[in-house]
Length: 391
Length: 239
Image (cartoon, rainbow over all chains, first blue to last red; front, side):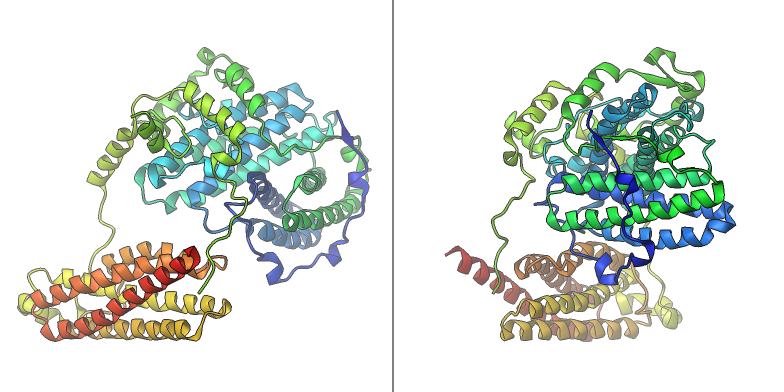
């Protein structure tokens, strides 16, 4: 496997030279129609990562008085990085169309991570979660078709399949069955730590997005669907968040997060074909490397340890932003019937009583995901075109 | 007047990626839905919700003329006084938003360097929308009602108006695309004034109806002008 070296040693742009203007952070959005879907995938992913960068740093500041000022300084820059990125999404996306794009991110990026992840248990967890987001895409595609009369593939651009995965109705589990075994911070590869921080960030953003836009829908069934899937996204944040070692210190987590941000900006930079967006990735990669240098120094000062204990070793090849269709199909066909019992993955008839009870309770009056997708099969130009061609 | 959208690399259709989309279509065809039924399930769920849903809001009673309204409601506003108040509130809100829509369109027309007569017409239409708003404010006040209230129909107009607002204020849309949005606004406006005149007449508000007929004349001209611009611009580029 190809590796990248020396990325995290680069100095980047010093924090005091990282500046913005209002004009800067509010640039012209990408084109919903003409830009490649993976440009939008990168925009959404990096927005999620920057949101999580702020989240982690706010939490850290609540516990560490001595770090409040450097945290606030880095946060201010990252807030403006996030704004620059999120404002690239154009207003002609309906919230449901953006939802389709969010699920495409969850599927394609998680699939890429699952294949790059060296720890078999962690990789299994990514495949497990992937099958649920894959199913969410199918339910939301049905909703988009049946609510707005639009084809989800206008957003997906034929990169991602629209078929059922593990049914959403089966995702609802007791919290006990959402927790996973965490990596060992002293033993795990850096990429394992990066993956966990990255996918947790992406899922957290998805959860928050659904919680914000769900009530914007007038249609009671769409509201119900968002309520249902947002609940699953909360489970996913629990699941992916639990992959991280709770024994890591805050500064270790901060170091990992900055390394994760730099790693992802480099991936975006190397694969972006929109020149204007590419310049943003390049600039922010340098900003993140500047943040990383700052945290290295703080780590040495407060922990009196070598940052290489956390950041040492090589990184595998970058996340590939491309259609993972073959991999996803294989995972669907081989693992769709897996379920979670505690931290283990088990056949579907071995779920815990707690999860079965919880699910029966939640599903007692019907399942919104089932209601919106009854009989749905995707077809180019929406199911109305399909019915017409079938006579 | 303005160019239409150019040819480019629009990536949304299946023809832009024939092999991938063929593959995608094949697996979709081979994979039946895991839940039996069809769109009917969604319709039934909506119907069930509609049966148990409450109202979105109500019409405030006219505060300053409570006694009058009680005593002479029929004479003043017909059997159902809140209906006229609701629709007046809607017209008021619509015209107020209309002013803002025209302001946004004037900014776009200026930026695009559209010819002076077009910009002058837009400015005139904006001013007339503002006059119509004042007209409805007076009508609401004459009934002792509160023109600052957002009535349920005004609220509906606000939700409907979000689409045109998004199109016209998007810095990337051209004049033609903005006219598409404006056309739906002016079509609605015309039909709504026609109805409001009938309602005013039926409620015995003849003076109100007379003023409204003048507003309708102006709105008819707005509509004809917008349709004319769209027709001329499109045909010019097609020829």
